[in-house]
Length: 208
Picture: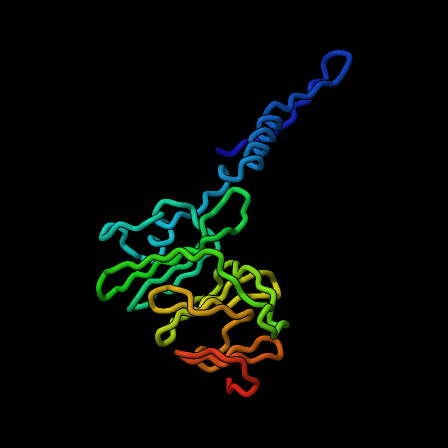
C-alpha cells in the first residue's frame, strides 16, 4: 500500500511546528527492507527454476527442490534438461559443492551430482608441481557435445574455468579458460588446448 509523506505546518502559537508522522513511518519501513534483503527480494528455489523451464517436479523425487539456488545455468532442449547451480547463502558467497541435475526427457530419469574441491592449474605454470586453485564460479554456460559436458565457471570479470564432465556428470578435466569450439580447441591466452573425446593435450597447432 503506497504511503504519502506529507509535512503539515501549523502557524498558531509562538513557533511554527510541523507534523511528519507519515514520513517517519515511511522511513522506518524503508530501513526495515534495507536491513533485511529477504523481505524486499525472494531468492529463487530450485522448484522455481524448474517451473520457469516447464519441468514437472511430481514425477520423481528431486533433491533440494525447495532450497534457494544461485549462480546457475540451464540447458533445456527436446532431449534433456541440465542445471548447474550452487546453494544461496545470506553472505552471497559461493561455496562448494557445485550441484548438477540432469533429466533425460526420453526416459524421465534424473541423475544428480555434487562436485567438491574442484581444482584447476595455473596456465602460466608448466611443471608438474604447478599451482592449483579452486575451479569455482558462477555457471555461465553449459554445452553438451558428444559424450562430454562443458561448463564455463566465471571467476571474475577477466577469468573463467572450463569444467569438463563425462556423461555421468563426473569430472573429466578442468582448464583455465573458456570453451570456444568444443572438440576442436580451447584458446587460453597464447596457449591452445586440443580436445578430443578421449584426450586433452597442450598444442600450439589446433585448428579452431
